[in-house]
Each structure stands twice: as structure tokens, then as C-alpha cells.
Length: 112
Image (cartoon, rainbow, N blue to C red; front, top):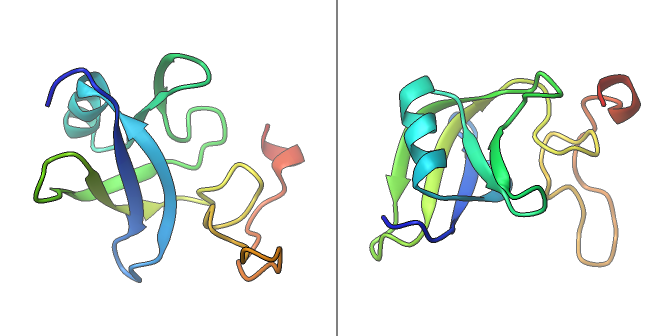
């Protein structure tokens, strides 16, 4: 892969639940492979980001897969705590009409 940003989907390795979508570049992928913890490229901060570095809710990588075009990554992970910065287990915690269907697992005010 080159230095482009590619989508990276984090999926619970046991349940198959999709937890979040972020972006990776070569540096993030290399750090993820080296440490076994998910690293992403933060587009808003324009820097490498270790998931859990401020919250303590790390993603332990069990397997890394790429799609057939090699332009998306699937991380099968064991999530410590919640994946979403709003306190939910998954970033996909609500329906398009705003109904909450996910589980809140921590209070963001206690973490950030």
C-alpha cells in the first residue's frame, strides 16, 4: 500500500459486530502489526493515533484482512471498553432516524 489513506473497519472478533470505521496509512498499518494494537491516521489531528491512548480502551488486533482490491482493511479486534468516544460499545449505536439501539458502556466525562 502507498501513503494514501484507506478505510479500516474494526469488527469484534467474537460477535462480528462492526465497532467503528477509521483510516490507515502505511505508518498506522505498520504500527498495528508491530504492536498488536490498532493504530489509525487521525484526519482531524493529522497524526498517527493509537486507539485507546487517552481513554484506555485499546483495540487488541486478532487478525488483519484486506479486501480484494486492497483498498480497505478489516481489523478483527478484541475491544477493551467502548469503541466510540461518546461512550457506546460501537460507533454505530443509532438508526438513521436517531433511535438508539446500541449499548452505552462508559461515561465519556469520566474518561476524557
